[in-house]
Length: 142
Image (cartoon, helix red, strand yellow):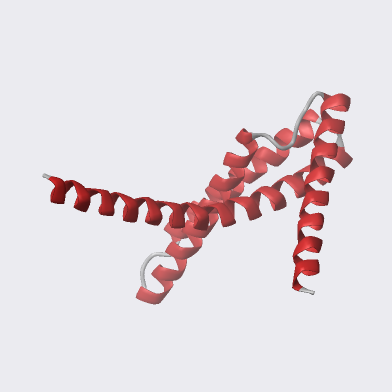
């Protein structure tokens, strides 16, 4: 049963990926515009990072009795980046495609950026451990 669940999840993810690819190709043919590009991913990741950082800063200031305005300003900058991305999507397409594409773009890239952050942390930790082991081997050989 576990194998069927895993297979079902893989099929579901592949179907979502295929649908997003089809939507991207359709928009490219119709408007000469692609929603899913590396630039839009980095803009979404930056937005997510600014929102998380701003919320963390605001919460920390609330707990210590500090100024919460700094965190709110950082979150507002994140919202402005997202608003600029959405505006650009609407400008390059029409209302229906701009709205639907923006929702798909921000949700898919937001999830990928959130998961990617933890994968990056794990990768950096493993890289650190591998370099630590390499340094010990070099010290022994010298």
